[in-house]
Amino acid sequence: MGEEEITRVVFRKWPENEGARAGGIIALFPEIPAGHPGHQCQSYEQGQHKAVVYALYIRMTRPATPREYADLKQELEKIGYRLEVVNRITPAMVEARRRAAKAV
Image 1 (cartoon, helix red, strand yellow):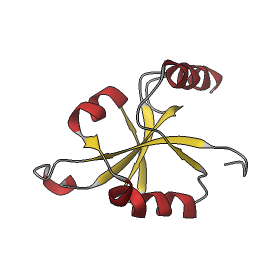
Image 2 (cartoon, one colour):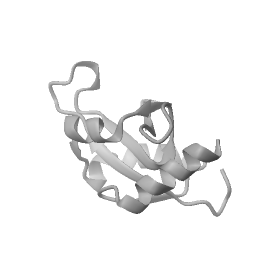
Image 3 (cartoon, one colour):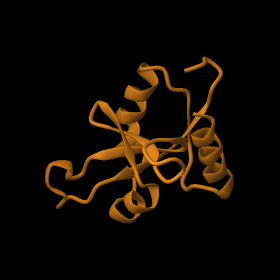
């Protein structure tokens, strides 16, 4: 990850009744492709990255507050991310993910 690269992130919280994930926080990176080109984005949760379908995870979670996501944000910054927290995806972010997927 380049030192000047800013990564946009959406922090979400799992419902309290979501089994092992209950109440946990997930970071969604709407501009970073993963899995099927252009349809999935990268996420980070519990110390690992994984591919997710952004729209599905938005439906399954709720927005996390700054207090709720503070620890995960700090963890991501420790591993080298320079983050810009956003509340929702924009068409420009979707297009950036599609372009990045094609470049791979």
